[in-house]
Length: 111
Image (cartoon, rainbow, N blue to C red; front, top):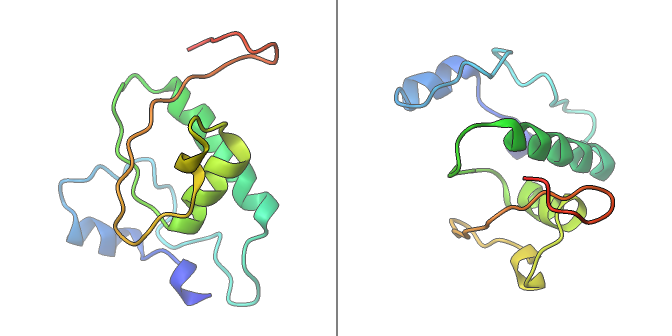
């Protein structure tokens, strides 16, 4: 689906000069293909990888702007939401604030 393809890095940089894009490694969207949509498992794996990356960051407050489908997958496959309503579908332009806690396999908090 064409709406899933991100714009080229240079176009994003021109439109948002205040945003640091150093971690965007490719000029074009190398994950997008016109032949097939990304599988739900692949989206879930990316969501999990994002959380691990986020956990390693020094920032304590981060804004995430993305598609509602990606947020829905993140909050329903890689995060346990309390209350569960946090994992419901996002409306266009909707803002939600979340506090993330990371735990090990035994449920011990390990932020």
